[in-house]
Figure (spheres, rainbow, N blue to C red):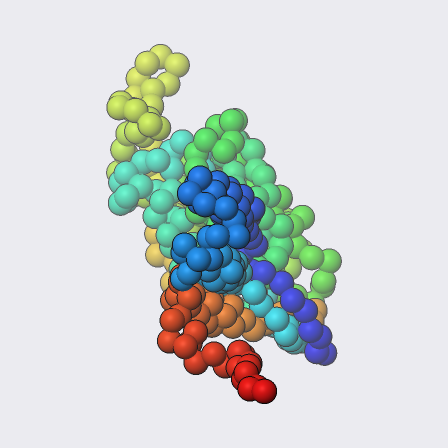
Length: 346
């Protein structure tokens, strides 16, 4: 399917065209001032005799060329595009829900730079390998929320993933079960597609029965994988944006450690695999899942046309440079358009 269309890829630069009005006003005012000053020396009909080389017309032409060059440069900056082609592309893959723990304990620095940042970096690498797959992003702490619904737009998922932090959810805790249940409702209604939930957490589940949620998901054909972030040695949790460590109600520092047993039980109940920090085993498991063809999508390709306007701008600048402000005496001597009258002697 082919179609033609015109658009500007960066239309915000078009606002610079309003400056043309200011240029014209300044030029008109300057011409008015010049005529007023010349009028102090001589009448208008005598100016051609006093200043024979002066040419207001040439000045107007040079100014017009500069304005046109400016307009063409602005249009080039706005990146005009023309001639889109609509292509039909059949994609195939699986459906994946990434459930990311953003509880306070994910700020722990037992793995560099901290648990959450390491999880985000590793998840971005995982997403880079999910070409053709559909992905949804869920963040959870004491509650679970869908940040990105199921989509094939991996770039959007990565953008929201990069913005994830521990302040996004007010209610603290680690509700892995809620994240799994939220993930179950995030898949499409297709019964043929392979579905997987990847839980990325330190495993300190204090809110619900995550194992039961994983069993429920597995019973519906959804595989639950888990990835543990952190170490089993207890570490303190840094405060966000200031010095010191997180304390409990009694004022004692809170210690956090990776609960591998919990994450292993969740993965086992969900028919998936568990990995500590490394994403490779989970990536391998995803690659072994059966893919299906998703709906046909249309992609538009635009051809850049900015270079045409750059060429016009260059031509205008060259012409402006070539045209002199004053009359060319050499051309005047040629008298190309002057008719010589001969005197007939009687």
